[in-house]
Image (cartoon, each protein chain N blue to C red):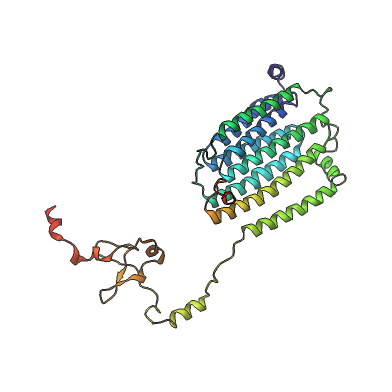
Length: 263
Length: 99
């Protein structure tokens, strides 16, 4: 690591400047992704890290991969993530309490161990020669070089991957598809039900909810001409939830006018 | 600039992603951390490709990206299916086999 610090002082090449700005940013953003509570914020930070990685790829003579990274990750994959987040519920903040006791200290200790091991390993490893650079391999252009490999050496894996993509798309369709448990009635069926039912009382449509002098909302039943409440005038969902109010409270004859005047 | 600096970043990102998979409980965040690990590996591939002056590493990174895209599609479909039946995207709630 000391060598690294020395190199910062020595090299003023554009790539070094780019690296020492974006590298720490990528690490900080991914750490923040781990620590923030809301999944949406995680997704945004994730997209940020992906873009930084794309810049790293382009800086390392992998222009094609850099562009693909932007298109596939920040474009398709992150949109998919956000879409599912919207579907599952944006507001659902992750509760940060541990369910398995002692999991977090163990995980952090293991991470420090693993990370330290990797870093010290990389620090001690030497290539024994200078980095070759891709100038020769990219002589005909990066895309052309990749295409030559993909369609010669790797043509069989390439075809297998296409099969994998189709399988994944089909699998996602099968998994995400849900069957209707009941058959939806058609317009014709609804009409027949209305006119061939027990009575013709509802043939012209159900009555609207109650309108009273002191209350005008969908949660009180209307009164029929004979003074009885029309329970069907309240939405079935509201009455099933028990949100239907008693109409008598708003009847003019029930109001205790004396109490109001005393106040 | 020494290309191996990218390897340090890659190692750090991989470690952070691994911690996230273990610690976080929202299935979608766990998935994002897996993506982070895959991308860290990709950065290593690209860096080694540059060090060796060979495009094979970039082809590997390309294949990793395709497989990662497949994995995201199927994984998110599974999350949606679990959410539909359990009304929860927490990885700890899907513990029916434990009991």
